[in-house]
Length: 188
Image (cartoon, rainbow, N blue to C red):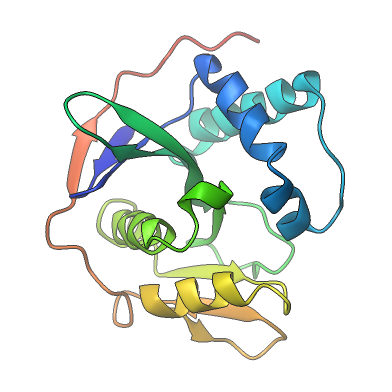
């Protein structure tokens, strides 16, 4: 497992102690509206989803990173999550294909955090995982997400709002640090 670090961000694999952070994120009205279902999850649902994030890491050695914005000293502000998943309704059956997923608080929106985190995640996928392509799907009404993905280097792939990125189109981060992360004990 790895931590990704850019000039402004720290992306770390999820741990059980992140349950309240995830719950607050998924109860942000901005996020509820962006997801489009209008449902506010219970704390139990948030904990169950966090457990799925952790299990994805266990099975695949990658997943969704919790994104923190660096502050003064050791302070960090939780912005949301960004990462890679193996499932996705628009993923082809081709192996070595993963989907990028990003979810940020309203307070983190419009500051370039999603672009920076997405570039780090995609670069990790190509350089460390040997992935040949990353897919992204954007709801037609989610113009912010579309702009973010285009800034990362995604290109339209033909079907509705399906996007793809390859090592040739990806925008690199020159100062990306990849650090080893001790895997937290997982409760089952």
